[in-house]
Image 1 (cartoon, rainbow, N blue to C red):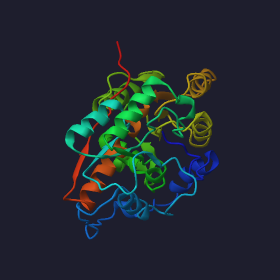
Image 2: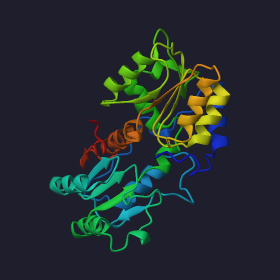
Image 3: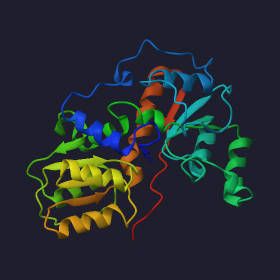
Length: 305
């Protein structure tokens, strides 16, 4: 879930950042550089050292306020193996145990809220089962959400662009604005379904509408971000992760009703941010080549009938 307010990236700042990126080349984060000189022994590494190393390579360093905290386990635990995933689901935890790994880096919450607060879950059987499973098997879970989104360009967004072959279609190297040619809405939908491995997509629009400028905002940025960006950039198409059905969706419907051509595609939160786990996987393999590092997909929680 990309929360644009979590690291002083308010709605105003986010829109401002998009605008500035259209006028200047995006600065590449150090994590995109080749850091092969930073290689560490798997026999000596602890959870805390892995986390500290990752944070040290993020522009601006440590955050005072963040949801990127341990959800279970200990900073002092020696890492036997590392798993990257979108969600530390019960199934992902069980597969981690079977691998002999003990450290999960997840992009999204473990305990069903953005802050992973658990007071409201006390004595809940599902929460207690998951907490016990982690504790009894000495599994540490760290969420890496704010830090990865703090990079510029955002590795999560860039991962989607790579899957879509949109890397060379950025407007002034801005990953949130894409220039397409000779494609209509139906073709964009089928391309997203095929390349992002999504069974079904929800959309608003005329399937024959020509699509030139695409505004891409992954995760759950919120309706105010979506609407402010639409107003500023006037895209032919907004592709976003997820929205409440009574906010951005209804705005787009009314926007069209007054005679303006705009379409909307809901890619789904998981599909729009899954590349976060791949990025961390590659980062960890480069830093710790002697350590077991695997990606375990959490999969899509919803099915379509």
